Length: 250
Image (cartoon, rainbow, N blue to C red; front, side):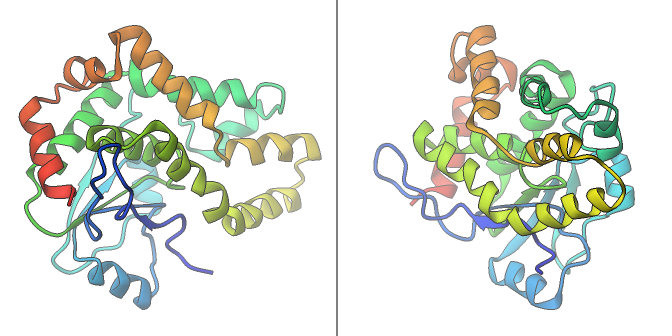
């Protein structure tokens, strides 16, 4: 099994006005931890220049991103303000219930809009993208699905990709994480979790359009539009958007 799970190059996605995202520019994945030599070479072949890690200090300490020659690294803990670490399965054990799992996940996504650490972290992420002048950026969290999924959605929105195509990329995680999730669920089954708990865990290791839609809805509710969220919530300027579209689109 590959170590770099849920990886994809966003190159080739078409915007609403007919442009395409350049290949070897925007890469998303789960944590690049203990990669195989061929995976590192693949990233180098994608002209990797920068890794942006959305995880917490605890997560980074437990599974640090690999150091790759000539590749810079930035850690932006976008959920530092959340009281509990929802990326930590140990936290989930306290509230594993299939009847509430969807609501819990949607609440997490809403916090991408609400919390100061999310606004600060994703704002810095956009500035980093705007300042990149060569090569590609790999952005990731632990599983590459929630923090990474929302980050990808923000970037794709800026680039002018339709919501339909944003959701298509977002939902690819179900297929890309299928094998990794099975291993995780089997591990917790062996540890004694019952089938109800495992159902909830499966839901929380997956993605649904409703989760991302919950974040979009809060952004529009609080700011009036996603464009206002970008400008007022994240401080993204027209100049930032212009630079991003120039560098990442062809």
